[in-house]
Structure formats: structure tokens, C-alpha cells
Length: 264
Image 1 (cartoon, rainbow, N blue to C red):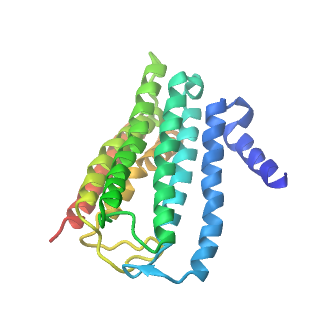
Image 2 (image 1 turned 90 degrees about the vertical axis):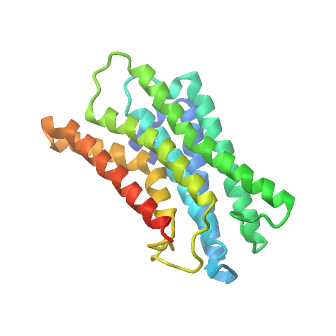
């Protein structure tokens, strides 16, 4: 019970647990579950030395578990930054369901393939694996589409509310997560990254690797709102232009990394 009490205590202080809807709490617990599953997977990676394309087979499942946990928890956090009861909106139930179904499918399939010592992405060795690879693309689009849907729900909920730098950054982050992730995701689907370990921790490569661009795309939902909050607190009247300037730089960085990733 102490573990769950600790989690509840953290959630209550960070998000106001008792004020969250059942859907928000479910999405929070899903994120915590993904983070919890990451720990035994990490331990397993130390005893299972198998590799795939010169990288440990458990690296990809761990990345997706961590990314899913962050994605789910961030989605809930963003709903708490908006005036009103967005987290209690009936549409948010479907948004949360979309996040859970699509991300869980990806994590389960990637982990299962890792247990076999096989890849999940780009694996079209037989018709079944080819279909599942295609379904992963559909799931990925559905996952980031949840953020565009959330942006629309928030926009409607705001009504005549004055748009603050934080709210502007939040909406831009959600929309960019959908748009940039969809584009970079389809580019990635047709261009497998180089084999071997590249950068520390993440394993990306500087050239001919679209994963850095895809990372920026997916995590716009975190980076931009954080910049909006910071700008609103320290930049005063310059906060709104600062948010727009950072967004422009962010998009330019995504284009640059995409160009580097597509280099011949």
C-alpha cells in the first residue's frame, strides 16, 4: 500500500488528485503502470545480451514504455492548465481511450517481438508481420491524433477566455505534436535508421536518421507548454512574442533535423 500511497500523494500535490475526473485518474495510473513495467524490463536488459542490428533487443521496448508514460501523464497535466473542466468533458474519455489502446498495442507488440529476438518496425518477413507493421503506423497516427483532438476540445472550452502565453503554447504544442509527428512518422516508415549505437542513451545517429526529428515532433506537447509557463512568469509583456519566436525556432529545428535525417 505504501507504493500506491506514495503515487497518490505525488499526484495529489502535482495534479490535485481529488479534483481529477475518473478518466484523468485512469490515464495517470496507466502512465504510472508503463513507468513501473519499465523497471523490470531494464533489469532484464542486463541479463539478456541479445542484440538486433547491433543494439540490445530491449532498448526499443524501454523507449516506448518511457515515452508512453510521459505522453499519458503530460496529457493529463495539460488538461489541468486549462480553465474549466476539460478533463471532465465526455470527449476526453474517448481521447484517453484512444491513447491507451493505440500506445498499449505498440508497446505490447514491440515487447513481444523483442522477446523473440526480432524487430517490430520494418519487419515484413511474412504477411502477418507486414500487417502488424502497418497497424503500428495506424496506431501511431491515432496516438498523436489524440493531441489534435484535445487541442480542439480545449479551444472550444476556452470560448471567450483571453489567450495567455501558456494557453497559446499549450495549443501550439498539441497541434505540432500531431502535424510534425505524422509527417516524420511516415518519413521514418519508409527509411530505416542506420544500424548500431549512435548518441549516448538514445542511440540515434546525426545523419540519415529521422529519429531526432521525430523526437522533437512527439515531445512538442511538453516543450512548448513548459516554455509558455516560463515565459509568462519571467518575460512579462514579451511573453507572447517569446512563445511565437520559440515555436518558430522549434519548427526550424525540426526541418533541419528532418533534412539531416533524409540526407543521402
